[in-house]
Image (cartoon, rainbow, N blue to C red):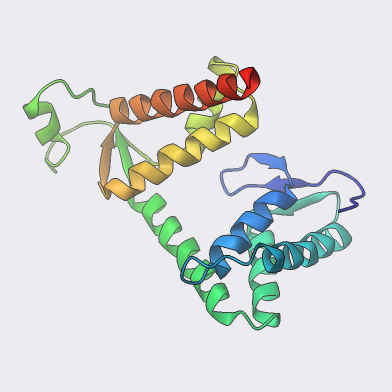
Length: 195
């Protein structure tokens, strides 16, 4: 796909990243995946429409992630893929709800009584809202990961946390998941470079 200038995507956590056509393909692929029968050709064609629209309508080379989401939904609907648009919409709101309901407790679990305090509503453990951007910033600023790798790691950790369905997650668990996923990605990168 030919593109003009770089477009930055403004994320909901107030960070930004370059617009990536491949992410749009991935989003559409997940939405139109019916009974594990993925039509990658259809996903690519619909993503071309989205990217063309984004590049020809955005101002100041900036677009919000919610605008991209709206364009993807509209493209799916106009191409008579209403169920895929609904699936995407449901996923978006479920994810937003999980983010708003998950907190991180400044707690290091070392025994059973520590774990019990997670569910004790009377405790004074400092809690903060779940923010994927904290993981990204930590990996980039303190540990010198590139932004795309940091975003990938943070997304993998977020997915695991949300699957656990815990309203409060200990910070120590988040750290362990971050380092496990970071090590896995670095190991995969090294293996790829040797091949």
